[in-house]
Length: 379
Ligand SMILES: NC(=O)c1ccc[n+]([C@@H]2O[C@H](COP(=O)([O-])OP(=O)(O)OC[C@H]3O[C@@H](n4cnc5c(N)ncnc54)[C@H](O)[C@@H]3O)[C@@H](O)[C@H]2O)c1
Image 1 (spheres, helix red, strand yellow):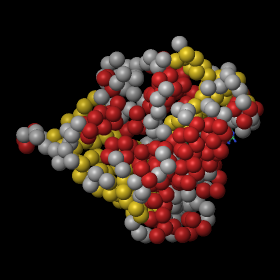
Image 2 (image 1 turned 90 degrees about the vertical axis):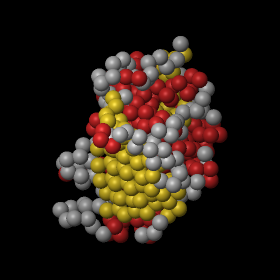
Image 3 (image 1 turned 180 degrees about the vertical axis):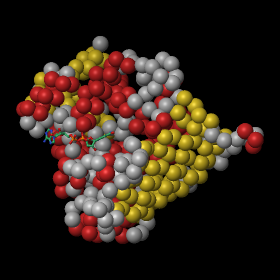
Image 4 (image 1 turned 120 degrees about the horizontal axis):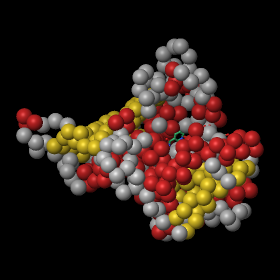
């Protein structure tokens, strides 16, 4: 079995822990055609890196991520730093011929993201972005139902990603400001629901949105004041039109009291509908317009048992966030071993960032903003 030696950059933070668990689980949950060695973890200081190495089981640690690129014994660079560092580190890793995984958002800037996607295409290595949620079985089932035509023609897509950390966390570190690498909720959690929306429905062609922030006890401040203060957006809403004719609504909010990582979507089609809620992530709710009217309604299908990538052989044993992190890494490894492309790629991440920026632009102008078709973007 081929050995893949991984280096994790930014491994002392939240996603450093999640990816460390993911790399440990990925080869254990299913056959992926390679063994994984957690070779080196890098972070800003020797202390932070050494602590992460000891706790999460990495063989070595360093405070100099550049030193990893010239090492022949590193095959994969996994980047989990704040987003403003993704592009320079990923470009250097691609130039060194490494396979590269990068957390979402791929960058905070669509032009930078397009440049990165082009560099990845030219490098010919496997590249993937950490949109972990789309990989879970219930969302896979949703995609199959849509593609098989079970829901008919897509009509309306409604999606939300609601959280309440802003009520309790006082120091948001790099996330608080654009200038320190913050993505705002549209780029941060909004990118996840945009990725899933296009994964399921295909291209978005136009958006119009509004963004707000609430830096103190007042309600929303004026958005121009937010931008002038270098603050990231705390909440956003936008409408979207899809190329397939469906219309959509999106809402993201860090000030949604009671909502705990509450990602969800609903799709209505001409023959039925589906409903998904991350807080009940093994289940997909399905309604068919063909059901007799007296028993029509949503039924709940538990989807985890039929999935080849997860270890749980019995439906209903339950998946978690860490499973989604591991499943995406399994797919990344399989693409390396099989010589294929991984998905979502840097090009997909750049595409998502293009829509994030269209939402930003429409919030500023108050107008609808057209999103260029995928083929027009650098792939
Ligand atoms: N997919 C998901 O569900 C999910 C969830 C949370 C965060 N994220 C993404 O993961 C990334 C990291 O977020 P986080 O919450 O883990 O942040 P974090 O602040 O907890 O961790 C970032 C780490 O990067 C390190 N770092 C900063 N500059 C560095 C440098 N020059 N060299 C090496 N290390 C450096 C920091 O010291 C820190 O340990 C972001 O892109 C974020 O959007 C994804």
